[in-house]
Figure 1 (tube, rainbow, N blue to C red):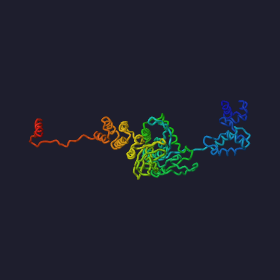
Figure 2: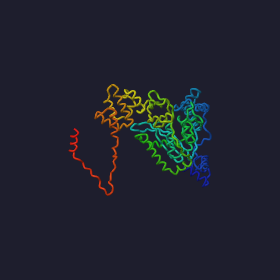
Figure 3: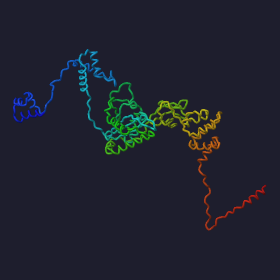
Figure 4: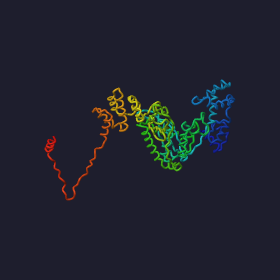
Length: 489
């Protein structure tokens, strides 16, 4: 670089000729001329691309192979330059080297590389997505599915975690997110999940989507616009994709521990409120462009028929209904609860279960049947799932006589537990077992005695009239009563 500068200075400043500069600095005269013309060393420059006679004739074949890669090489079974070289060599008689094919493919891929445009986040628009993370609920580790809704303009977010990623969680997440914002975004951006978009039996193309019934009802209630990203184009909703990852690292690491899903979601809600308060000014711009909130509680509705055991099947789990109830019911499913309705009346409420084949029963649904079939009481699922105190089993064993009479007594005790409460009845059973009063009617009297309030006196405080002395009552001696007894005898 120093010699380059001396040559330029000598020629351009000191007036030295190119011949003299060439001789003085021992460089070729043409080189000295180039130094004088260029402010900095230009480096090596090709006037035209180097000829590639070997792969050049096979360029259309290479382009055709690359165009068909999605069909012949799906997913991780990707097409490599070595595969292209082997096909050219074996099927098309290519005699060149592998490196030439690899450089040709690299140039073609760079030429067809996708270009992107910087975008602005508009107020009142949101993006939604699910993200998985490991959580610990009541001491048990499981996979939690977090529904995430983000307002990219203000970076205000809302997150709730559910046991399953399904339509119920999707709808419930929207309803809670809108309540958290206090408004409804006018436009929402999603990916193409099966609980929102009906599968068409073929790869999705274009932007038209056929929505599921539940999601259509949600849109109709809140009146927001829904738009879907193209398949395998997560960059179209890049804001929520990035935020899902960053918040998983910040809020779900290490593995969060909670006594219930409700406790975990309350913690996440508190974190979301802190973020919302910190970005109140930016959120005000979003709120000004959003839609008013409406009163709507989304759910999933499924028609079902109880079987002969009084059980309704929903997603491979079973829930009890009154044994002599209707023959057709409507299952109203939310992420954590199952309600069973008949004629718009709720006839059963269950905590939702997620393990396949499990049964959830209510003792009140089977008490009438147990009165007709008392011998089943020892192994009846509703009795075992009722969560009765141990004293109930002690009572059953005490009255059991292998004739059915003891079983009927225990069924009567079960009905009393529904009427009077199992905790109060348990205390009465302990007293009954200690005293030997085992008849259900005696146990019922014990419960009533424990729960009844002390009697209130009907006598009022008496005051004597003004200026009068109160009456004096003289008690006769007990000997007078003895004399009366003697006369009577």
